[in-house]
Structures are given as structure tokens and as C-alpha cells.
View 1 (cartoon, rainbow, N blue to C red):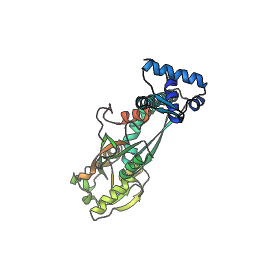
View 2 (spheres, rainbow, N blue to C red):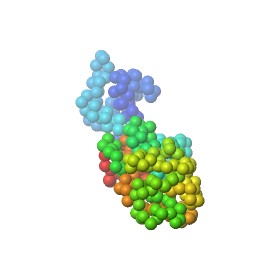
View 3 (cartoon, rainbow, N blue to C red):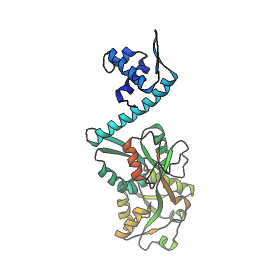
View 4 (cartoon, helix red, strand yellow):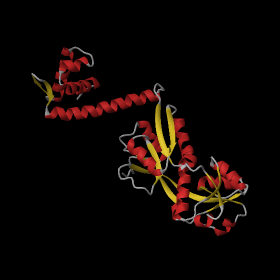
Length: 303
């Protein structure tokens, strides 16, 4: 059966206004033309979609089902139109991500590069939060995609695998902790630490775990970046706790060593979360596909 988008828009407009004349005015077309279009559509599908009365036009039971299908098709058509405009560069799209310090500083930059190269019409906004705040921001619609600690429950969100993250100690060459491999945070707490600023999500987590061990960190220096921390550790200022990915790189470039931690909490699974697959724009879905270790998001989604 043949139909086109104006047919569907007319049906939706009549259902909304309850009047053929008011619906025709929204296009705008003559009432006679709108009446003819509706009659031909009903004849082609062999259904009566509206009941005419002195009070206006109301949907029949069949009409309600047809309207629901029309609305779905019209929504998909709008999304297609938006996507085509974005791909032609006529419209830019902004995607919002929030993640922990570790993800923002290590995993995400490398993962986002290929996506941004493939989709130059996309702008990204990256925010840093702890995992609980990431989940809350996704729930409230403040961000499109979150990266969070996979140990947290997300019953109301869609969750997908991202990366595994491990925190390790970074120490100067010759440090006593090297002989204790693997070490524990409790072993390290007697030494001065070089840390991120206290407001950074990863640093708040580390200091929380230190307090749980009843021995707060002896913070000697707070530095703004992993690179600055590594330089200070190399000069013997103190020890630090960093993501393994970053620490391993520094161990290849500087006179520092990586000491693994035996603490169970030091190894975490990082996961992606979104409100729902249907709520994402086409570009956001593509970004999730780029980021997730599951390359076909529709195949292995867990709520």
C-alpha cells in the first residue's frame, strides 16, 4: 500500500486538533484538498480512521492504532532529516560525556579520536565526576553517556562494558616498596604522597580508601596532572597512586617503578551507561559503539 509523509502528518494533525479545517490550516492546504487526501488514504487501506460528528472528528479504534504507527514513522523521519543535516555540516551536534579522572585521563582520549575523525560534525563536552554522580547525571538527562565504576548497581540504566582499570603505586627507583611487590595501600601510607588536587574524583576515592585503613594520606604535594606527579616522584619527593596505563608509560620514560597493589578494590571494571538505547541520538549510538568493547551494542545490552 502506498502512502507518503504528508498523509501521516495529516492524520496526526486531525487527531491532535479534532478538526479537518484546523488540521488543514497547519500545513497549510485547502480543506477540500485535505479531505480528499484523507479519503484516498482510507480507501487505500480499507479502514475508517475517524468518526465525524458535530463536535469534530475523533479516532476510531483502528484509527488509534494507525495513529500510533504514524507517530513512530514521523519520529524516524525527523531523526533521518536531522542526521542528514548533521552529516552535510548544516547542523552541529553536541554530545555530553561524564567520567572519572582515570577514564578522562587515560582511556577516553585514545578512544574518542577515531570517532571525532569519522564524525567532524560532532562536538564533545567532557565532564569529570565520581561514579555515583555520573550515574545521577545520566538518570537526570544532564549527560548522554557516562563511564562509571562497574561495581555500582545500575538497575534503571543501560550498562555496557568499557575497560578494566587498575590503580598501582608509582615510586622512585630504589624505593623500599619495590621489594614488597605486591604491596598494599597500608604499606604505602607511611610514606609521603604526591597527589592530584583534593577535588578530583580519583583523588577523593584514594583518600577515602586511606581513611578506611585508619591512616590518612601524608600529602606532601598536590599536582595538577599525572605527568607532573610522575616528575615529582622521579625526583624522590614522594610516592603516588596512578592508573596502571599511565604509570607504565612513566616507568618507561623516567627513573620510577610500578608496584602492583594486592588490594581488591584497586582493580575495577569501568562500564558505560545510558538511560536507554532508544533515548540516544544516532550519533550518540555510534559513539557508544566506538567506546564499548562490544562492537554491536544491540547484541549484548544489560539493563
